[in-house]
Image (tube, rainbow, N blue to C red; front, side):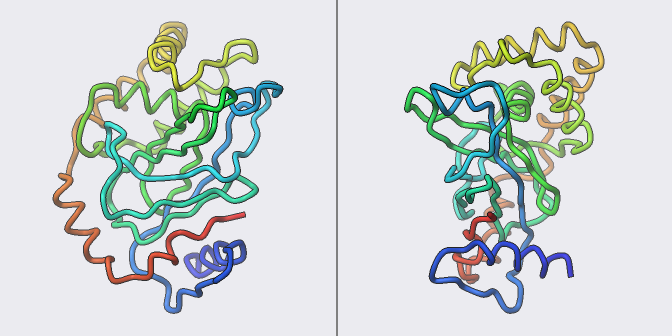
Length: 227
């Protein structure tokens, strides 16, 4: 029932032609909201969080390299997205590419597993950058609760006057390091997440095999944005 409701919501916002998946497509679904401080995407904007429409959302490995065979999505007017036909049981890096205030693209990130909401914002980006620094291949089994807690802590510590750009990797990582130094609990959470992310339980070849099992599904069913 929950899957049927999800796809009904997805299809309510799809553009013409609107393809109805009946029965529901195989594989798992990843959904979430993409948002960012307005000043990152609008040169006249302030620090308030705003949803990001028309952002391209893709799945990548721990190094940020796209995973072949998986579909992309585009956020709707409300910043929501949905990507279906995913092999379940894997941890993915979810990347949303948006135009920055200077016209150059900004990549926002998160770590997530299908069937769990994967919201993407500046805080999830900073945590993801910190825990996957230097990694290649697939991320390991990251504890979703620990990831959410670390992201919430980073989000709470960021001040309106101190919003680092994800495009400046050195500055972004330095900001997280400083926050962790000031917050021992956050430091412990990040260390836990780093160890988990650095211990993959599957290879890219294994994922490719599972991706091939959904290759005969209609890709339009995985690309409709949520509004």
